[in-house]
Image (cartoon, rainbow, N blue to C red; front, side, top):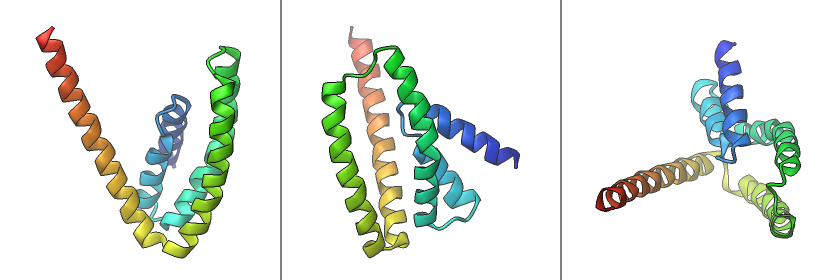
Length: 125
């Protein structure tokens, strides 16, 4: 139970920072709760509705949102979400889990390479 609370808190905190807290929640559900990938994705999406609403309110009050940019992106994101939902039913959870793992590995490698480049650039300056 305590791990559920910790995973929920970390997912919400990371998600509110705009860093993709879904990765934390999906990994937790898939690895530690033995949840099917598609079910974990559904839980993740439901989890982030209240997190997104609270984050949106806070960022809007701080005037950190450029609505002219966000609204078209959000509209396209809704279309993409519907397409992704449809495709996930066709592809199956095992392939989706592998694609998700591959994307996480690529993102991690990209972050490491970016950090090394930044470190090198800081040494040169």
